[in-house]
Amino acid sequence: MDKRKVALITGASRGIGRGIALEMAKKGFNIAGNATRLSSPDNKSGLLEVKKRAEELEAEFLPVQGDISDLDFHEKLIDEVMQKFGVIDVLVNNAGVAPLERKDMLETTPESFDRVLSINIRGAFFLTQKAARLMIELKQKSPDYRPCIVFISSVSAVLSSLSRAEYCISKAALSQAAHIYAHRLAGHGINVYEIRPGIIETDMTKSVKKKYDRLISEGFVPQKRWGTPEDVGKAVAALARGEFAYSTGAVIEVSGGMNIRMF
Image (cartoon, rainbow, N blue to C red):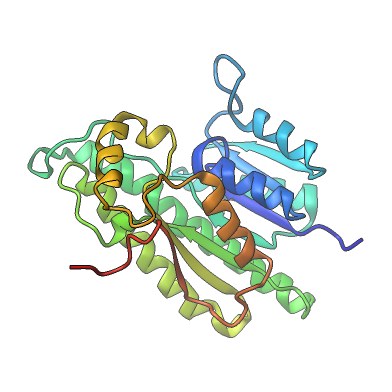
């Protein structure tokens, strides 16, 4: 049996990150999952719950607690993964937050803006920088090593939402970061991709479920259903397994057709 590859996934404790972790475990990856806490107060969710599920799928799972917006934490995160597995084959930049409160953009506060961008783009950019340097070193030692990096952005990277401007701006910046990293790392044989989820059923969208139920029923999503974390996970796994090896820089939209231009 081939040795399992290792995926480092940020924001892996719930929602899309959890879906990615479990789909990749199913597809034969070992997982290093990062989140700000190991478990919820009732112990029904969190990294330790995902670890249990991943291990039921015969994957090894390393939980690493820490805040991705803390740049000093990045070295600790990568060191722990390397000590456990000796390699990072895939980095999935998934960690992200919405505004604490949806407000008209004319009411957006600097505190909310800074928090969202610190986690959604600043943390991801600099973690990728550190991981990319490591991947280049590992590639020089082993020419058969085929790492990749996946950025989880959002359709909000290109769609306007007046009640969460800071979120849209952060995802647009993340999309551009994926584009530039793909350009920079192509010569090193490191593929970089962007996945843009649409309306995905997670804790983040729970507060606006009625609104999105209505929009979906009215055709805003051509496939007329919510997306699931598993939908996103399957796309990440396909990229990580090298099934799009000649497509670095590709943007894969997992949105039920929201990318289709219609009139």
